[in-house]
Image 1 (tube, rainbow over the protein chains, first blue to last red):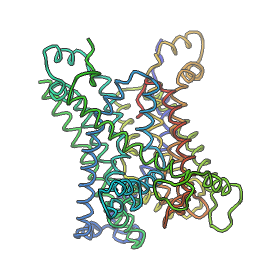
Image 2 (image 1 turned 90 degrees about the vertical axis):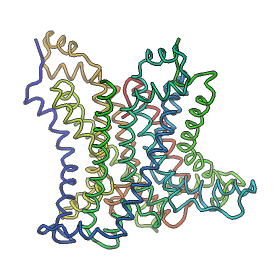
Image 3 (image 1 turned 120 degrees about the vertical axis):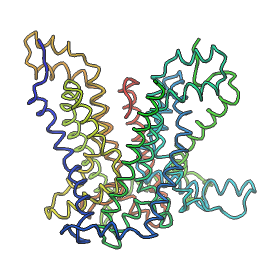
Image 4 (image 1 turned 135 degrees about the vertical axis):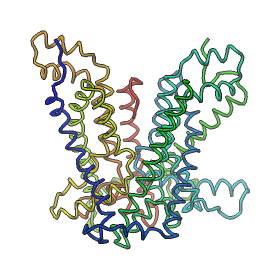
Length: 283
Length: 280
């Protein structure tokens, strides 16, 4: 006897969740519709004027800053995520593992304000770092790390690190011991094994994680708002400024569509990259 | 012989580099939280480091804030906290109730449908929150109906669905179809088999999803930043409005309460899924 799901029951089981996600899909469509609206403040007619109006040096700079910061933060996060994933999977004590898991995961989940407070206390003119450096006599006047790109970068790395670590942890768990043992018994050094065996085997996991981290960082809002001030105009903040002092709703929607396209492009490109490279490895 | 990715001895520069990078990662993850915690015990009014004296005065301030109703500000911290908790609980219950049947349908259903649906329910995870906030705001404004607390619940729901669904699917994956068939062959109806056999077995995953939904909604800032009104506002928004101009040490003490609550809840999730499933 089988209990294969009938089409109707399958639909009935899925329906509540589909209703719950419907407002989200509605919101996606609404933004798209608004971005091609003929009017700045309401949906009326069709026009691509909102997009054309974005072709300014100011918006171009904003796109550039977004791509630059998201890219650097992604590279930095991946450099730390791989060793952290190795550490997390090689810890024997369950308690140590749990503490490390919580330490890494907390920044993604914890109220972003609390983390911004932490960075302000650390990097501010009378903060931990400046006091320590001054105490040691390395600097005389405080160095400015806050309300510029450095502060935003650190915040981005911190909040996106968990998104990098945990997917790599699951790839590391799936790593075959035989490959590593074979390389090691043939006398390969640790670095050799790392670059010639481990990294190629982990590549799909690493590329997938990196693309999600990039998308997450490119669409960051609270971190650049709280740590960058008005000075670092990443797209998220620039979009907010379009609606808050300027009430340019269709412009904000168009800028939003550009941001979405940017993140989707990266996600699609990375999944293509994974497919191509894994085919080459197999062949 | 087991070849570790992090050798215990030897390894030279490899081991050193890996541990060095991991240490920087741990420092970047934890330092902000540690500094907030230390400064919340400072006795002075400013936030200079290191604190010269320690005291619990800011904790007393936070408790006083909650006990003595503050009438000077438009939105009291008590109201914001209650709204935050109410929103988080509604989001938690609804998201779990809709994800359990969906997880069942996806795991037992066709592979193709499952892949598409999983993709659909991952979208909110990578979708820029600012744009989502603006879109929900525009929709809420154009509705011209007062929906009260639901203006925050509905966007939060979209945000937590990916996390809850993953936990439910993870729990459902481990349950073999034979157990259900056995129950049915003993005379149970298919729905009864789900209720009495499958759901109890899914319990750990369901609980993990519940807690995940609770903490994500309770800590959410970006979308709420666009959606809040004078009547419906949450704790993170209250904290933001209080610290727009300068950082007040009592807010740090309040932050420590939130940090502790989050750590306890994450520990609980980690214990519940105990390495069987991935966190996300």
